Length: 78
Image (cartoon, rainbow, N blue to C red; front, side, top):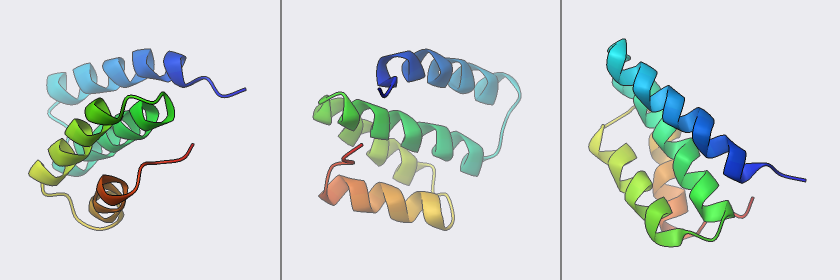
């Protein structure tokens, strides 16, 4: 089965590394998008929406922004 609960610990690590190593906005946004998708898959819509909005605040280019906008309108289905 899917291991969404375990994914959160890896996403926590990604957030830490992104801050520590000053990753660019795209990489930080990509991690935040995945966190939102994970929250949606776990039924935690409020947390997911917060993450998608944080993605948009980072102003990434391309697919990450488009996916965040998509999932704000329709939850990620897993």
